[in-house]
Image 1 (tube, helix red, strand yellow):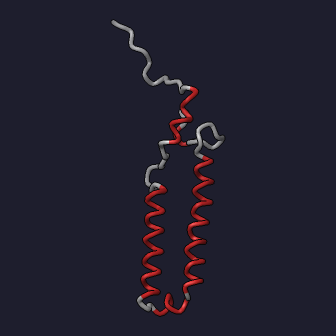
Image 2: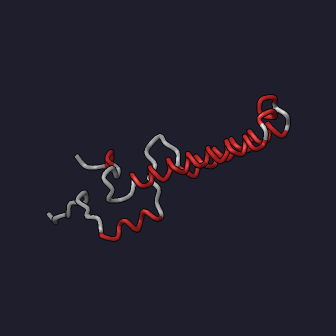
Image 3: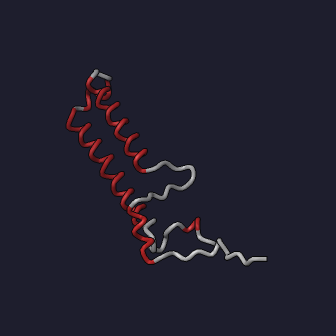
Amino acid sequence: MVGVPDLLDLDVADTADQVQLYMEYVPEGDISWSQYYLGLSGLCVAIAAGAWFGVPFLASAGWIALTGLFVAAFAVSSIVHQYTSRRNRIGSPGHLKEMERP
């Protein structure tokens, strides 16, 4: 019988960290950051439209308060995005622990 190399035994090349520039790790059941930001943008548009059309609570909030809310939402989201991206960076201590071999 012809010997077949063990296909499950893979070595990662030194340049594997460059792949991270093009890939985003999304755990099963989660959404990607692009989907999250799209949803957050849609929510902000809906709130702004509600204020524009006179929805009682939103219309009384004022544009400066709504703008502050939008900026705060994106700032907090960006901080969390940065934290999770750094944690999932190839070679970092917490990198993809659920995918490691036993």
